[in-house]
Image (cartoon, rainbow, N blue to C red; front, side, top):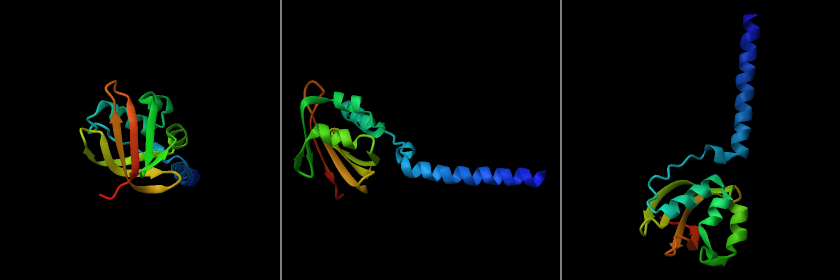
Length: 140
């Protein structure tokens, strides 16, 4: 009886570990917990929290109707870009903050492109709406 219990426990541990690894591979965002306390600009903080959680409604609500997106200097369609990216792209760390909390540099994960260093530079109007976002690979 004792060996049957041991075998059962070993089976459960092994199968749980295998399924846990599969879950990590397919749902890596579950593991990314990033402290946003060092983000001093409240609009930027809300944007990064929405990005991290893949919350499209919160993300798009922070931008004005004519928001512009530039990816490595190339103008992109803001709405379609983030419709695809949200839930699949996120910071894994924020390493440097500049420009009164509006420019962020850090490590980033994209389910499609992998891991790399990036920057996000937010322009915010007097109504606390984001009017432009510049993103791209960073070399810091």
